[in-house]
Image (cartoon, rainbow, N blue to C red; front, top):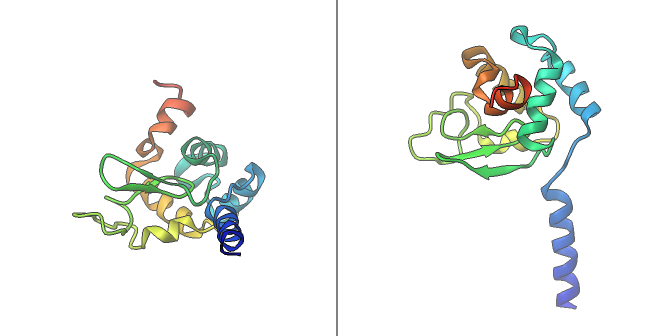
Length: 134
């Protein structure tokens, strides 16, 4: 009985842990949240950046040189959000867990601040995959 409960719990955790949105869903949400043309970049630029950063996985977290990268845009905790990283700046004024939400509102809000201050060049994938400079 305990094994069955443990297996069910693991199955539930796996289904909740990683959600991958479709390209059309991401484009629709980004457009609704005002990314189409934001700071002179096309909707496609934002969609491609999100794809190459996370493959549209909203709950993706990975270790980085300093802190961790969170969500669909893989936004770093040292500079942009709060996760307890020592010396973190939290410039987006939000917990990093907000960047893992499927509605993408916090991710887009923080990405807009990043783009406004640093441009899309803040994401290495934008330079490497979209602009084609390796």
